[in-house]
Length: 108
Image (cartoon, rainbow, N blue to C red):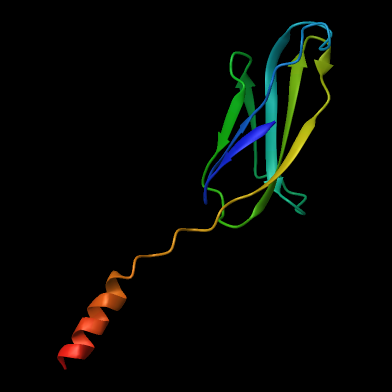
């Protein structure tokens, strides 16, 4: 699995296994995620078999999440692949306010 990360979203991408290794054609994928260390699932989705990615949004900045992906076919659910990802921090605000304050102090 691979990922694309921001402060509030993560996109997880995976490769499809061969039909032989999956014991038949897939019907869909299940994707679940939770804050690492938590026992409560933050989200769980069924993903169309034609897709190989999932985006989780409205996540908390600088927080670790564990994502799990499994394929499902007529036999049942396949093995789960897991990936732990930490979201990025929010970008720093610009120094516009400090520049205005500095300008005001210098004028006083």
